[in-house]
Amino acid sequence: MRLATWNVNSIRTRVDRVIAFLQRSNVDVLAMQEIKCKPEQFPVEAFEAAGYQVIMHGLNQWNGVAVASRLPIISHEVNFPGQPAFGDPAVVEARALGVTVHDGDQEVTTWSLYVPNGRELDHPHYFYKLEWLKALLSVGDSWLEEKRQIALVGDWNIAPYDHDVWDITAFEGQTHVSPAERQAFFAFAQHGWEEVTRERVDQYTYWDYQKLRFPKNEGMRIDFIYASPKLAQRVTAAEIDRDERKGKGASDHVPVIIDLA
Image (cartoon, rainbow, N blue to C red; front, side):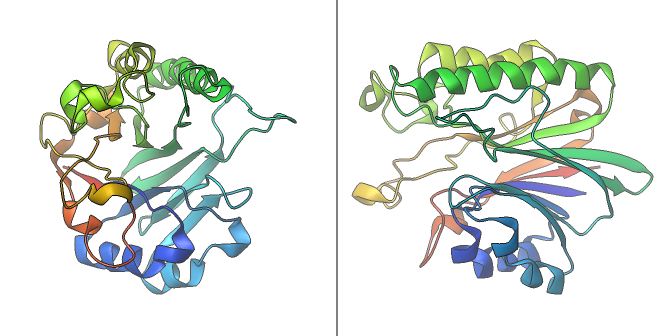
């Protein structure tokens, strides 16, 4: 089984690139973030023509998550239990979608996650981000107790190490690299989850559209795959498809892929 995660930054804008990636990469399950559309606006027909079933969760032109699978889908869950709300009025945003598929005689659940950005260190969105991660960690503990094969994948909006950004001094006083955010990220490993890409590939996953960040390779590593122990032991390889940032109409993120035995 091949599993990938990709912040596509508007599926309607990039559907052709996403379908081409699926056909080229032989990916079985793709978790997408920032689809930026409602379910009725999602280009389902293109995925079905390529042999994929899609489950999506979107409320408006912001956020949104989806999972495309060519393996049989057993069930899905919109939002994780206890997922915090944000805004006035407070809304549980479209940031989490869990899809369970049949992988031969096994079941694998993929949670497509779009972690809140945080915006600024003194912004309410930053505290929402930390609350969101804490709630995910809490429900994740119950999932680990069930000893299932589960992947928490997506855009975590956190650069865990200094070398995960091109110049740590450029991020002084900003989000994504603050101690509290990094602590929230590492807490998943401390609770028993395993980030399965780090030891296998070391590359950025995001380059801003501004200031020629990609040609200068001034990027960030903020897209990750945390696996439950039962799933982690099946991982044989990982890659980051840097070429997907090239050319016209690219997302500012690239796919992160793992292979399972």
